[in-house]
Structures are given as C-alpha cells and as structure tokens.
Length: 456
Image 1 (cartoon, rainbow, N blue to C red):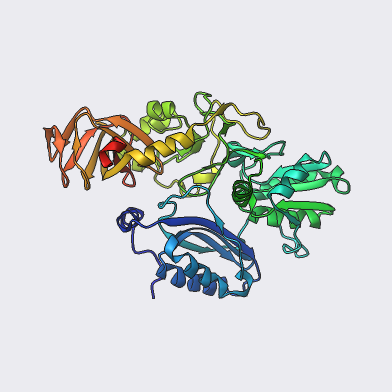
Image 2: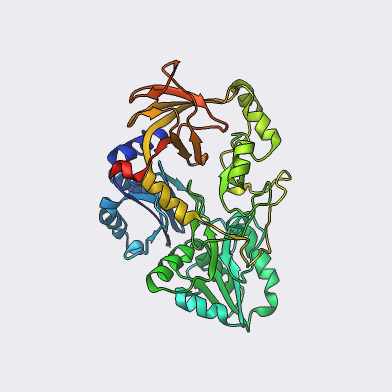
C-alpha cells in the first residue's frame, strides 16, 4: 500500500506539463474531533493519491487544515472524498484567485498536535464556540462603523504586502504570539467594541474568535472564508475592495494580487515592491521582499555574505550548512539586520505605488513558448545548462527563465553553446549552455518570447 511520494518535485512538474491539464489550487479547513488522526491521514493519502491531488495538509485531534492542487477534471471526485466524513459534508473549498499548475508538487499529509499552533493549555477553551461569520459586504459595512476594531491575525510578512484599511497588524512571527498581544492591547474594549478579525482562509480567525469569546469579549466577528473568499465575493458581486495590496499565500507563488496597490518596499533598496522571494543561499533561505533590480544585482541573495557563499564550491557550501536546521525557515524567518527597509507592525494604508502585474501577466501568457528545462548551474562561471525539448533557439532570441525561487527573468541570447560547441541555433534535443547573471534551479523552465503573430 503506497503511503508516500514516488516522484521528485521536478519529475512531478514535468508530468504535469506533459499532461497539459488545468489544475486548481484550493484550501479548506475544519475543526472537529478526530479520534485517530493517523488512520484518518492514511485514508486521505490513499484517496487523494489516486486522484493525483497534491498539497500540504495537517491533521490533528482537533481537525484538518489543507492547501492543495487538484486536477480540474477531478474536482467533483475530490469533493466526494470529503463528503465521506460527516464533519466535511458541504465544506467550503476556497479556490485561489491566481491559478498555477505547479503550486504544489507533492502530497504531504502530516499528523500534528494541533492544526493551528496556539500555545494554549486550557481544557475549558471550546474552539467550536466561534464568532459570527460575515460575508464581504457585511464585513465592509462593519469596517465603516467607528465602533469597530479590526485585527489582522496573520504574520508580519503576510500583512506587510497587503491588509485591510485601518487594521491592527501585529509584528509577530506566528499565530500563537498574536493571541496574548492582542488580548492585552484590547482589554478595555471587551464590552462596547465590535472585534472584527480576518486571516488568509479563515482557519486562524476561527480559533481566534473562539479564544476572544472565551476571554470575555462580547461582540466578536470574523471574515467568512478569509481574504480568499472575500476576493471571490467582491469580484462576483462588484463590491469595493477594502483590502489593499497582495494576499500572501503558502505555496511557491507567495502571493495573489487583490488590488494594484503596492504598500511595501524592497527590503534592500526601498523601492516600492511586494514580491517575496527566498534567499538563494540554501543555508539561509530567508524570506524577504526583493525588486527585480536587486534580484539581478544580488543574484537572489539577501546579503553580500550570502552572495559570496553561493559562489563558493558546492563542497564548501555543504560544510557551511552542515548541521543547520533550515527546512522550517521558509516562512518563519522574515527579518534580518541585512534588510535595511523591512517594515512590520504599523503599516501604511496609502499605497506607495501601483502595480502593472495584470498587464505584464497577460503579455507574458500570450507570448511565451516553453522550449526547455534547467539541468544545472555552474555558480563559479555563472553558466546555466538547459535541455531544449520543444522548439529551436537562436542567437538574438529573447527568452524567459521562470521558476518558484528564480521568479521571471528575461534575457537576450547573445551566445549559445550546444553539445559542447558554439552555435547560432540550437535544435530540439540539444543540451545547451550560456552565461546567466543569476542562479537557476532544476525547477526552472526556459521559455522563448515570441511575437503572437507567429502563432496566428
């Protein structure tokens, strides 16, 4: 009985590309009493693996929390696997605003003590005694009430790139830090204020609203389905968005644009920017905001120290990170003395700039043609190696190298080496190398930027 992944992320990505089928990124959660989380976990893995459903899922005695990628043509079959369990009958599935077939490349279901770590050890706390759920229009109306206090129950790196106007944005690393901080800050408002809260998909607020009711707050409300569902409703119903900027998401996209407002800065130069990335130094992997110019100059690194490190021989890099626990730093480590323009806590409501993401995204989607994949990067000589699979490539062509960490990087081909020698045009099946001023990874894809009229 298979209860584990048999393919690497790179192999899975290739199969998804070859299949050419649309996938849906979605999330859901449910608080419930699960007697045997291990058995529950095994049942889900077997059912979802058969559907080619991928994602990051946590199960515990208190319920389930899932972020997933599901084949669009298997959506109803996937929903049927949830309906087997009484506590998930009719459960709301939050479908992502922006879709990406590579949002998740493995199926990982972990048994945890809690689906949302809260740091609480109180047997009298009832997580099901939650606050009142509000839809988008109701939430907007309550925001206008001067008797309302609105709190963002996400982490500092999430609220920094986008939040609701006038929200309290705690400068915290995780959810359990925010509960005592907000509780102490709002002690004088238990009786007479509306406590309005939100998070990404609702799971943190579900627990937070129950916690604050447990603490004696009388008027507790939460945004139904979180920012994801709010966005869907405002688009479908033509409602004004009171959320500004980006919604941070926990897959390789690192964000979904809700409005064109940019409310954060590049952490290195201060330019208006809201694109998160992870440092290229695998011993650091710091999560931070970096503009395209700094990405190119710093080769996707957060500091000069990390920049120097990635140019060391691989053996020396392995020695430097030997024994370091870096696997959990992807989303937890968002601060560093090397970042001169990092902002947390009280954030601006007014945008610093307007994004052109929508136009850029549309432009790329109609002009890029996948032609190959990355195979290796020689950091010392700054040479990238790719396999040409779908279309020939010539000197003078404009290309796009794209990947979860690399982002989107455009280049003009000035020189190509195919199968060990210089050439003007590389054919399908050729192994090519060329100089690249930034590091590439095995998950990166090589696209040729073409004139749409060529495909007419």
